Image 1 (cartoon, rainbow, N blue to C red):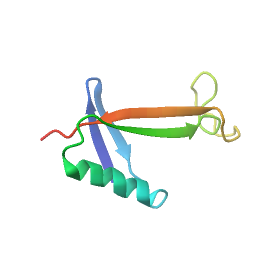
Image 2: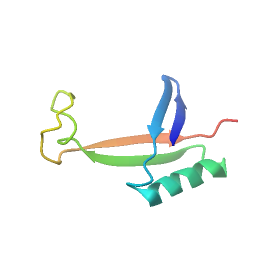
Image 3: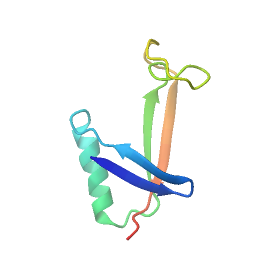
Image 4: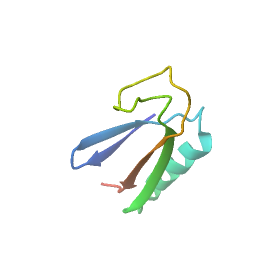
Length: 79
């Protein structure tokens, strides 16, 4: 499924891939279902070499990282 995270810059849509990371997806959904995770932080490290070049452009022929990009954010349930 796809989860939408509202930010002050718009909605960030995250596609969950349970076939690739079943425990992470289950934990992410569990946190959202608790409805009390205001301020909860999430992090994900991704090897940049497989996805982006030094300018930030997609490069699918590069070797796997390092370097790594650290993606992070804060969860807050609305509604």
